[in-house]
Image (cartoon, rainbow, N blue to C red):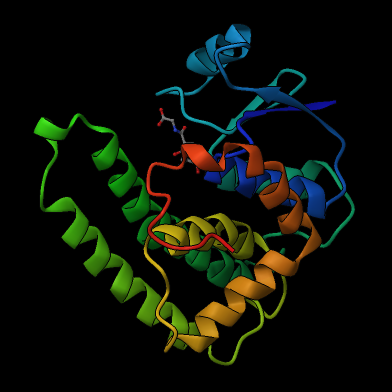
Length: 219
Ligand SMILES: N[C@@H](CCC(=O)N[C@@H](CS)C(=O)NCC(=O)O)C(=O)O
């Protein structure tokens, strides 16, 4: 059976889990926490900088959430592929996967890293720079989503797997303005999807550990 190393509160673990649930793939979850040192050691060995999720399928190891999703498309599950098999349509899917990872999740991770640093070593410019980046991303995504249900190709796919955790956590820390109705409606649509409701619910016990909690409402 496929094994997935990750943590239920981790955004990139969500991305892989959503694809696993969407495609109905049975898997064994390998928890990354201090009680499971053997899992931490495995990930430190398998991923270049110990980042997760990591998928293990027999002898095969796949790192990077997007690569894991593409691997599942090819080898496991029954649903339509998360990345369309038509290479022309796949461009939009990969484009939007990158947009959510790089222009929503990455700035948020930068902010999380900044506040986890001890106070005397914090860079005072990070918050303003992250907010400016997210303001631009939110405005662009609001226009992109104006006539769309899902982020790419009119079908649920890899871009939505990336969007769900990115918009969930980003909105919690830097609320999406009410004027961005299309983007807010898209986030609500994502949260109503069963695969995504499941990862959100499974992560509830760790909410108090979100370093940016208290700035907005998660849902
Ligand atoms: N590009 C990677 C990003 C993975 C990533 O940033 N994972 C976070 C958890 S959400 C992580 O490993 N954090 C721990 C660390 O950076 O040491 C992917 O798509 O899988």
